Image (cartoon, rainbow, N blue to C red):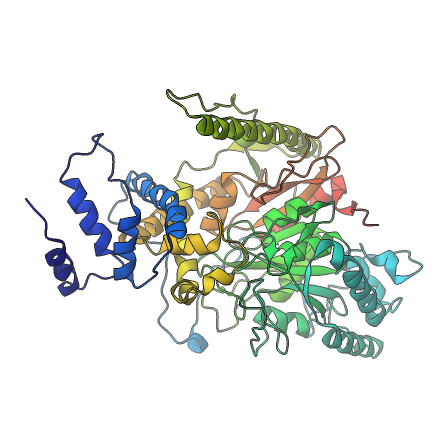
Length: 635
């Protein structure tokens, strides 16, 4: 049999086959398949010529030779991931995780299950009833600067009793933002005029007895993917520096209504990846030679540095967890659908989540209460009540832990020399082995802190139940994220404006977006169906236990972001002077490289919409350890 390329492509066009199936690649692979491959199960090698053919029919490109060379490895890896999902043998009855709601946004109504745990904290019309109960007494201070690292609860007590003014707090935080930004690079835009006006209004209302609740008068910072009327919303990305979105994001509106004071729009890695943005790299306050991790880079750095009372971040695949780990803050990634994302940059419609980064579990709960619930615009936002002041007794909670993640790991399997290895190949192999050994040494060191956490929980009377993460091809399923992100920034790739982004390496968005153009529609649906399986299997874990404690890294981070489960990330102590030294260059890919004197973290997970259980268990651990009280010395 012979194949005529023109006839093949014409047939594809007549059949309506366009970019989703990429007939250029179909033809090339079909043509190559006529020649038996070197190995029976070996797929034809992807070439730059294939990319050219597929790109022309997909309506993207043309790509440069350098761009195509960068894409080759990613395309090959992406294709190999299909087999892992196919091997699941998904039955016909298994639907994809994606749910479509055809009603107009303003009319959409969604029924939501009742929260399983009690949530009967009473509120009055302004949200302040019962909030006043259990508030801490005023903390001691001589000047506003002494309150830089105070919790929201502590600041609220001072503001409510008029021991300090919101204006004084706001001016103090703005001064600190200006003082430390040259060192930490966490501010994109100061909202000083707006903040001072809000602070003066808060003081007037509190003095008149119109107290709105625990966030009234508290200065905060927004990750700069949240729209704020009258100010740039840059998404941290070159080419968007002067973008102005003429609306306030729902989260901003709700914090305004709670009386909080927005003092700054904080950095994020370009288009929510990493900690590098168009103005530089946001730094870790504990070790400014390193990045803060990302993508909620400025939110975590500014909280850790005592430059805002709290911040709002976002997470698609680690963007609250990673910088909270690196910077030693407390981060809450809510259940998917808990907080509406209207007015926030979309990266992945089925994975993006907004949540607080603060100093304590209690603070995160108060903030979540203010920003959660449907807004009639984001169809994913669920109408499920969250009561932050429910004093749920943590003692009866069933607490699991991912046993294999806490156990010592098997010996490293280093790359062996290959026959005929060139000097360049040997150098690359040895460098890779050295990097693996260094990473293992850091991981083993941090595991001691994780083991100590388990012992502390047992000392608290917790009966830890061993559980394990479901064995699924988590990596290949996350191709959903990149496909959605490529769609979200379709014009950026097709127009060539992706060259304006700061980062242009093989692991960065421009290259990822190009690779995603070659992700077949059928494989997207198969991965979505595999995600349904993942949601079911992860949810089954929370039938066995109420809360799971886990290291903050590894596969659980991927699994729970795909399944939409909530997480609380807590500081879990500081590395000692004997900690492995950090690498000379921080590539931003690992959170455990901080070195001596930097924070480690611990994560608590719970079932969907069970943030009350998270607050109870993680809050109890935090009170028993006090690690949230540690803060970096900046001067």
